[in-house]
Length: 436
Ligand code: TYD
Ligand code: MG
Image 1 (cartoon, rainbow, N blue to C red):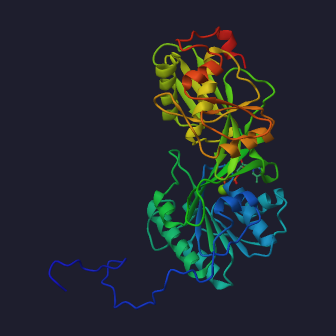
Image 2 (tube, protein in one colour):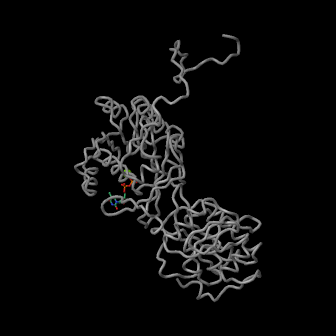
Image 3 (tube, rainbow, N blue to C red):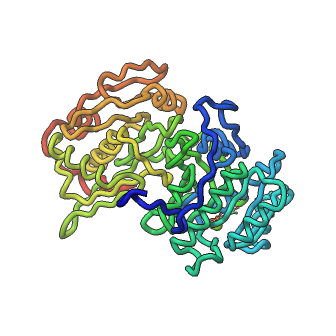
């Protein structure tokens, strides 16, 4: 070897022995699309891109208590009931606890092979003994450890090693491996982002405390889309799929009060109507408060600034609270218009028309920008009984039963929302604004 050339070092720091040559192949797929292993839980399969891919590893992350174990057990039971072979290894709960949960969900007779273990060597030895299962779930990756390391379970080194071994097991045997991972307070899969790099797909299971709704969201997917969501409702007997989530996120539309607007959104391939609620209140001393649930704080600051600078609203000095109903997180810029409408409505103390939906992105200049898939959004609105839609100018879609109100900027929106001309609006009487 030449002087100065990098010394090849293997993973264990040794000089590798002479390598074995392997055959290179062409790009043509040999067996078409990878066959999917559908679990039969429709919302879960759709988020995965049509079912689990053999030989792949998938991480399901979420806060403790959100329902990860429930979801996984349900998916495995459904898969096993339709003839697949499923193994569930719990590192957190004793067999009796898992059985109790299964009984509660009415799944006791599903042919899922159950184990309670935390040592990766034991788990792999067990899995490699019999016929390779179709799907294996490990709940949770933070509890798994290897005897090869001194570190405690849950540490980065342990989680990484265990994940790596399980991913390798999936690739070499063709089993689909599901890893459950807890999320830390700052929203990361505990243990490390590195697990996210090791696996093929990462799903997050989310829900707000106090709400029964749970949203499964793909944040990484080697074999499918990343913008799909699956919606579930936590019931006394496990998770129920919600096929028409719009109705769920709309809140109680019978009592309308100032400060609510309905956003006609899209999540993945599905239209989704959500209610956005705002409360603008006289600020106390010091800097005004801002609290946001389900939306981006920076985006709210921007919308408030645009409403002041371009619409002359004068809302910035007030306390502002914004909430997306039902515990959903909205990431689409097209939600700007609905959020702005809710803010104006609360500020002015005038309720928006009950039968109206909103979508459109607001730019820093105050202009309203078009949004994609207008037709899908509007059809969903019409289906759920809305009769008018405030949309970006230039939206040309004809949906029977729905009147479009195209607007070009926030000035138009202010006019629509009844806050009047472009002048610094005065707040309506306080009583009008806080009644709900
Ligand atoms: P779990 O799946 O254990 O959460 P995770 O694995 O993410 O920590 O579910 C926890 C919560 O779900 C628990 O507070 C009880 C509730 N739950 C129900 O409401 N109904 C049910 O049928 C089950 C199994 C759980
Ligand atoms: Mg659990």
